Length: 127
Image (cartoon, rainbow, N blue to C red; front, side, top):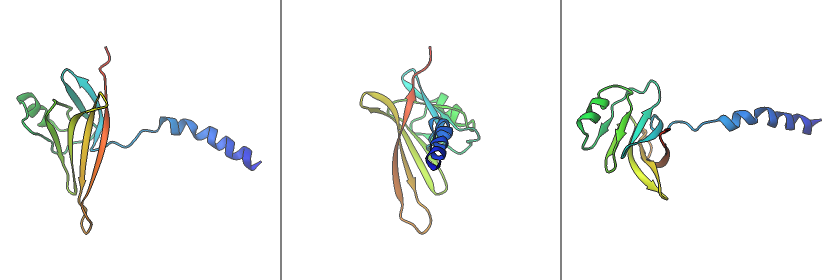
């Protein structure tokens, strides 16, 4: 009887596990290829400061709108500052695939600073 209950529990919760999604890294919801660059889309409600090294006029306009997507081009860095953390996002070639490389610096009071590295997959535009 106990085995049957556990089996039913696994079957009942399997769809939840299959549809689970990783938490956003640095408030980035997803990224999509756009021309030579990558469009970075933020989670709803994201309205923090953002900066791009060597930003173009179009990028500066997008950065001035809280939560608006930003198109990052190769060689540029997107900087997302926070109170105790910051993120630097760059376009990277990972085994022949375009991805976003994210470096997060975390400096909490009374603890050693920590650095985390993540890769965010970049979706291809649907035709």
